[in-house]
Length: 86
Image 1 (cartoon, one colour):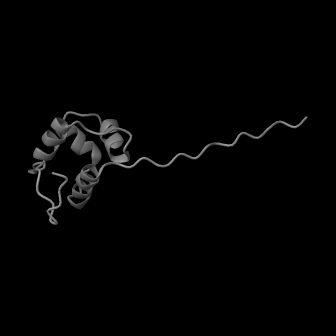
Image 2 (cartoon, one colour):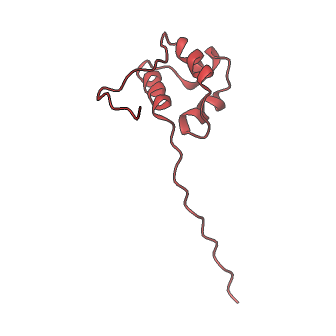
Image 3 (cartoon, rainbow, N blue to C red):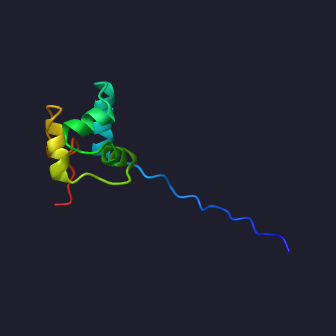
């Protein structure tokens, strides 16, 4: 009897949220490494890499602190089209 071949099930890749992706675009543009960014924010580089991959998401308070180290802030703004459910 032949041994069955195990097939791995493909899982859709994780992706970081739009805000987190933008954060990493800024880091790339400023040529800031994940290690340097993690060190400046008292995080391990693995945690920051997990943010980048979408494996985990930063808490809003952590994101606010991380952005402030870059001279940025998180703001809520009205959408350009102004459409709302309420």
